[in-house]
Image (cartoon, rainbow, N blue to C red; front, side):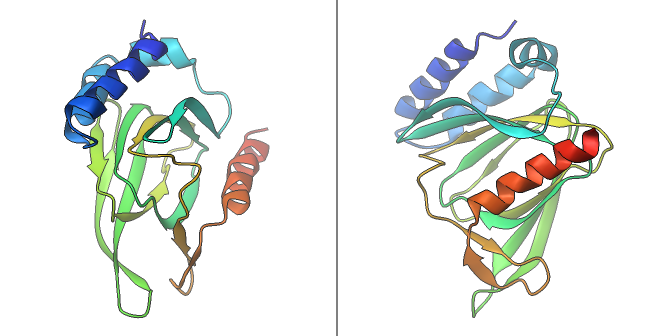
Length: 181
């Protein structure tokens, strides 16, 4: 079984080794995801959508993120690099490019399944969908304080930029949980 404290220690050591970069952290996450059943045993089978903090400091945040069935989070940025790895289910990412005037347009996509790991650079804008009818679990490792960073999101209809609304986005997880019941 995966030791979550050891995983956090390994990510912190990789961060120091890579001088704040994501390459070594990606290797830790990829190695961890080579045994998705060990991750499941450590975090437990997902039963509810939500954002679960595993480690948090000014230079590193590790989350166990559980997407509800068919849940979508509209375009947003992190303003820091992120390493995302799937241990159960699927996560589809659409990548967006910023246009003049603050709007965005779709620029690519990547589907992540069990055992997959990817890096998002600090300037990446993405939206996330769980396309399957069950919960999806993912480890998300961020190169900074995920909770303190001021971020942006884009309106799903107009694609206009606005300040990231944490409360609204947390409600999406609770709405997904209500739909599960």
